[in-house]
Length: 253
Length: 253
Image (cartoon, rainbow over all chains, first blue to last red; front, side, top):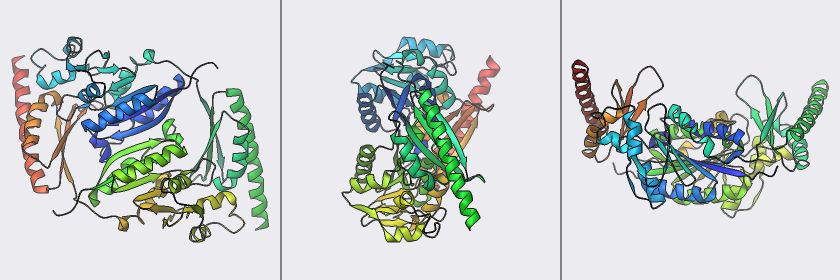
């Protein structure tokens, strides 16, 4: 395991996500997509369509993380300001680029390519285009920042053209154990003891309150599958012990 | 309309949201819940269960926004570190508090109140408790920061005890117009002209690529319902014009 830890930050851009009108699903999709590549999402932000906020967030994330993914704000309308903001974040000029126009021509006739649609061919100088097989208007890469569409189906399709550009890191595996009738508060102490003996594993517990099945899901994540199998046995053993205690309590009550 | 603009920031805390294992829904729920109170969410962040990151984010948001809502990390296990981090963010001491223990006793017997569960009664000094009618373990308020549970059903129930503590602001209304068969690129120019004549209205357009119905939804948001009705008529008129142009194009092709 000589590979590096590779990190990512996600910037979701759009007023509609902060008004609650639209539910963001891009963050969790990108996170799940990055997992098998061994790239860990460290932080995600949902921000407004506001130039200085986009500039500051992208600059900060670009310095902090190996890769940055932005989604949203690269369409044809007046509130689509992401491309201009990214150019400013890296002090690049921005203009309509012929290679991007060429992509748009796969969808639009010369007549349809009005001023608004040509906005989608405004690309920061030196950026590398990201193909959009659905609606053709490209995303683009500047340094370690990948600027993608906000519409989930298009964003997902764009990731295909991003994958080969990413260095892969230490892959994390995860195992989950569901414990029915066990309470998080009873498991907390034995769980923390188990975690302390596995340096490279993070152990989380997620109680289930909604469904009829009251219980806890334990999730262990780490780079070593064998180690995770061992920890799984220990968690199952802990659950067995806690269940036994519960049964005795019930008998005594 | 003498009311102030009141803002909010949301901090969603939990590794499981950044691995993509869990889909965050707290952000959009809180945003929709705040809308009728005239409180505007300016930014949302999903961050790890990591003390210094929680401290820095909460400090920054507490200064930037009228209110801050955090969700997650106040359970009984070793990875629940939000309460301690909030205390540190405001340089407060933290300890087990009797009023919080009292709430826990509504659910747990003295025997069940082990060290792990008592963690849920650790409250920063001077904080005001937030009732949890589902699992009893309270949230708390420090200054303008409301610390809530991460489990959506519990978080939602806690908001009931938060509502009366919030100053309400200028309420924003929104109207939506769906246009079938219209493309965002054709609407962009007339739309930007409409927006320019309404200073207090923000106008967004959201293309629909997924369903069979290809089209655009136009959403106008602003404080004046009458003004929104006027803009709605203008948008409908614009859609009518664009549809006519489309029909003529089809006839000529």
